[in-house]
Image 1 (spheres, rainbow, N blue to C red):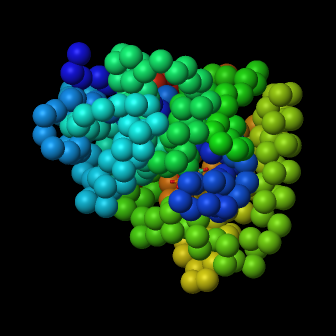
Image 2 (cartoon, protein in one colour; image 1 turned 45 degrees about the horizontal axis):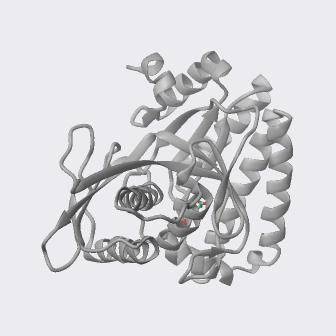
Length: 329
Ligand code: PMV
């Protein structure tokens, strides 16, 4: 066998990884918790080659968009592969191909899913070629972390909690959530997340951040255990606003939020106030809004999203497959 493929999902954190205690090994300042976005995946293919070194190229495969990776991005990806090869006893050289089932302009960072897929592909290659040591998915998650921090949570398909070396899966009664991505800005961000991790420590609000995130994680886990959806919403809202406040009070300050992100956040709050129910809202390091819904909220989601598109006619919405057909325009 000279070729192998693996896929991994993107993920969205409700408690954010923001700030590092080690930038070389991607060690987080605080624990985080995410939900995997199983409809937004990356695939990585490894093909053995006689060429003198590893190289990356975009994957040309139906159903996948070939990404464009800068020189720097390619080096980072191949450096992680080199690290995996040394950890997993992989010899020889490879053409490393990657692709995503979501377009580059859709506001979803592909680093978590692509580094996780690379880690899984390297592991499959090692196993198929006689690597004898057994490794749990948690250990593999720790390896993935060294390439891209948030990728360690993409080794799992539902809730993942990351505290130390790698992430682990968490089981809560709410396991079948639907996801809507509200696309408000599809431009490449000016401040990378690596830079954001460094810059937030200059904010006066970084003081107490680790304690705030740790306490919220504890409260969120309690709310998820008890299916207290409103609390999940309240904690997630506070948490992403905390992260964006850090960005906006850093030295020098930077911001990913725009007027539309602020408006949508406000409309979600008003919706909750009038209906007593609504989506969990969060934002990543970007202007786009992620909404999570319980499966029984289809009617509610329809109401909210139709008033959203009335108010922002140019907005693009991306739904998880469970609901995609229900919202097809
Ligand atoms: O893994 P990185 O370095 O791209 O960090 C991503 C951090 C956030 O996406 C902003 C939050 C998170 O926990 O995913």
